Length: 367
Ligand SMILES: [Zn+2]
Image 1 (cartoon, protein in one colour):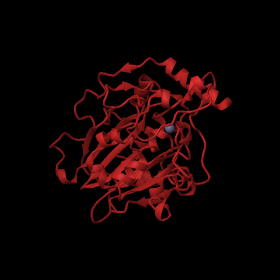
Image 2: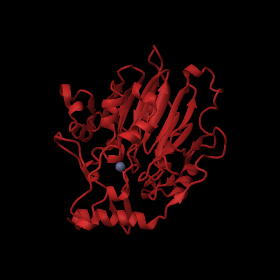
Image 3: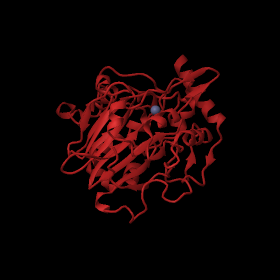
Image 4: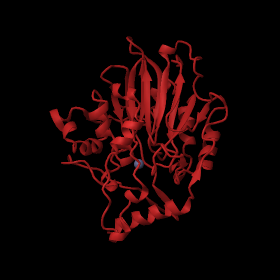
């Protein structure tokens, strides 16, 4: 009961402190600040495209091979992801994947995905994955922490055949600043990725108090998928290094850093040795709640030194992306921009894109 009261108070404070804001100029004004202009990518067949799907969803494509991160389109309203006041905080509304929204908003090319990476288990990162993995990207495997797998085993189709379509990356297999992690390869050998031990910024922080929504891990498989927002537990948060590989040599031709929650430095930092072998081309950073940590994300950017930054999870995800896009109330945009400008090399471009925006990049040979 006490925990539920805290979560209600935290959610109300988040709502009350930040008035909804319509953003008119999400895109940086410099044309093609990120990637190359259409038709100017050299050999277009070898271009890497990254489409921002909204929240932490990305669709990465190279030579017809597709990788997805945390696709999410269901966007239940705030009242659906908090306990009902009318029931004295005792029950959480039932939520589930909005299959109509997924079918409307998930590009057809997602059906070719061979890997779906999920950084943590909150509903806005994982709730749509069972439907997408079983009805659309039917050849994909899902990669996440042990709690992600425990939750997904609540889906009978994913549980079939020993649950081999869901890979639990153990904390021992994740990398850190000091230790390299395990490289996992997609089944088509088009991508390799390494989980990085990360954190998750508090949902709310003020007056030396902080609160993180649905914190905790799971130790056993569920019999059915969670049916409330609070049931989708944070689990073990990871960031990822994602390498796009050449065909057929399997050499990295492009490197992406992906996070779907801000971490307290140095959590989420890649191993120094791995970064020394190849630079990061694009860093995908989560804006929401980033300002709840100091030196975030600038301390990470000083390490990554990416050529480009794509800012994600910045928009209001309590409403459909088919409606006018508004700023997430937990995104302190001014502080985030300042942090970016402090740390990014002058030659780097960054963008905070509208959902469904696609960026194109050349393969890189940078060492
Ligand atoms: Zn989260």
